[in-house]
Image 1 (cartoon, one colour):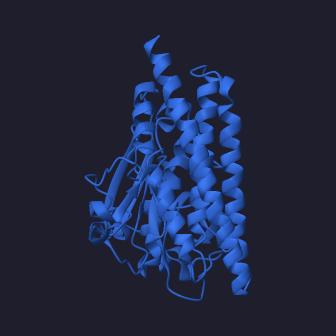
Image 2 (cartoon, rainbow, N blue to C red):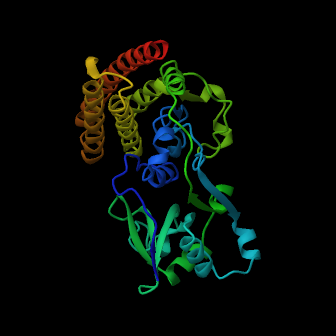
Length: 343
């Protein structure tokens, strides 16, 4: 038997698996359009760069917390107590239409960076199986540095599953996700609120952010929200001495691409008129974010300190321009949306 659940092969979001997988799933379904374009605006970042895993930006959305999705979680210990055959159990769920979000040990996974090199725990999405090849279809970051579907034979999968080194409770869960119709309707007032929170950098530290940042780090004065993330990223580059964590510029580019998609949606649905060239302005910001990412890659390649210093100086300049342009265009957008609502 051959089963393959639908995924988005050209997703806007592809930086962090736990954020991109839900988007990758629901962006294929028209009924989720309203919810998508009302969300993924708010972002936050830790101001504490002592741990390299904190030098990243995340969305203010708990993964898979999306109306219309049926989400069922099992702890590994509970799963083992069922005494089910792992392969058959997962195949059965895939046949029923459930995506399987799971952490695996990449030492045992072909087409992964750490295959036969080191133990490395990473999240994956099982999207199908092929009995002729005795393999699962696995979405995740491959050894080519991109998010794509690769095959893993059942026996290798079993080793990867059983010999997981879990470092927190999230990694010990198995999550089964099924798509149902989303009845959420796009809400202009909610979009305005989201944009205002972003522009004003409203402190939302009362939310549970532990799914991405360890509890010890997320007190209110250690996190930047909304457009204030620019100042933290700016500081990150100014103080750079080692290699740049390329997930950061990639995430920044992803967020700006998504803001452009929201603007395009508003124009398409005639919610706003592009008389002020919102789309053109957002395209400029996306182009700057892409240049910033390329310069970050250049920084990691070159070795001369003078070239590295010149590169980070240019990146800081780009960040300043991006923030000013984004602040101006989003403020203008909020005004137009409010005027439209008052008509």
